[in-house]
Amino acid sequence: MVNSCVLPISILCFLVLTTGGSAYRHEAGQQQQAQCRIQSINPLEPARRLQHEAGYTDVWDQTFDQIQCAGVAASRHLIQQGGLLLPTFSNAPLLAYVVKGRGIVGTINPGCAETFQSSEQIDVGGQFGSQKFRDQHQKIHRCRKGDIVAFKVGVAHWVHNDGNEDLELMVVHDTSNVENQLDQNLRRFFLAGNPQESEMQQRRKYSGQQQDDENFSGNLFQGFETEVLAESFQVDMETAARLQGQDDNRGFIVRVGKEFEMQRPSKYEEEERRREWSPKSNRFEETVCTMRIRENLDDPERADVYTAQGGRISTVNSHNLPILKEIQLSAERGVLYENAMAAPHWTLNAHNIIYILRGTGRIQVVGHSNRAVFNGEVRQGQLLVVPQNYAEVKLAGNEGLEWVSFKTNDRAISSPLAGKTSVIRAMPVEVVMSAFRMSRDEAQKLKYNRQEVRIFPRSKRQSERI
Image 1: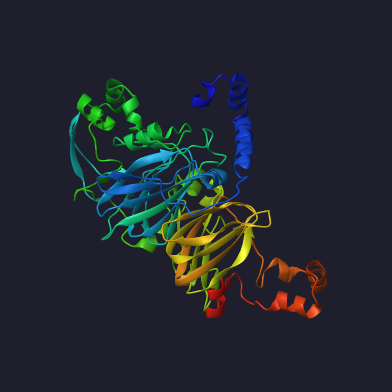
Image 2: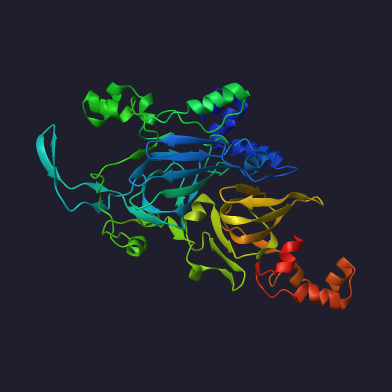
């Protein structure tokens, strides 16, 4: 808001301040629509890598047309064993998919009680002498491979890898979300460390790039005077200076020692199903403080669509994970077996941000013209954006194809072009005959030859033809 109002656009600033930002969001929506007039799309690799003490972060360039069209920002974190992604929050809600590994996720919701308490007393010397107390903190969550984890806008969170392998997270922020009243650029606000990005500044210097992009420049405490922090927390100046992390060169994924232990449930499933109740509980606590933030999409038994010789698709939306209603996002996890096909379809009400998890294949994307805006190979680690209402088809290679798709609507709806639930199947045969100038027999074959839903097994002859 402050950045917008320092510009010489007094009328716009007045409207933003007096109408809750609706005028600004309307203008941003019009700009986004203009950015979706793309002629072609391509699989995207990360633009840069940020190295940290205990891992790295890959960042996709927000200036790509297809990313601007979807109004998102994408990044990938790799957290090594014993690594901690420092507490942070952002101006946009996000979904994170756990590509591999397991860990602990903490979220800090304003106004929520500290419902977790340690079992051991700790001696602490303070202003009033030595005291004993039990550490308390807000609820924490387990995460594992295949989980979708949701974070609301402005809610601080951290992630710790307590597993026996690297923890990899694929993250998509929805910068065009109505809750973001700043601008379309992702802004991370760190509460610790000293994140820097001289690499980014150098890239802009030599490329002449003018448009703002995500940047990392220290943490919030660095902007305050040290004396003010010391007074705010009633601590000495040395402790206050540590909050600012001026000499911290670890990045924002840091390594922690054996002292990093906290109270957490011992069983994964019990922790997620448990609800915290107290005699003083109120509606706010029951709906926000104890809300589930994750859902696993890796379990084959959980699949929403399954074809024995073709593969499976699992979805998560606000029906089975209510927090998604607040952040207006959903996700899909797809697995195609060797040479199988995901039926041609379009998404009625959302952009699809597709991240390739494993294998190789071909994707064709068709817009409102009579040609494909993309028809090519995809492989592990690539990102592809399919705009709303653009039709797509996925064809797995000899190794199969797996993906996770982030959708910019909490109840994204797909409409297949072929298969048992397709638009062609739903038409009267006479309409099909007239529309495509074919005989009744041909129209009936077109409607009923495919009995599968969304996932089609494909013969070797068919796979070689495409």
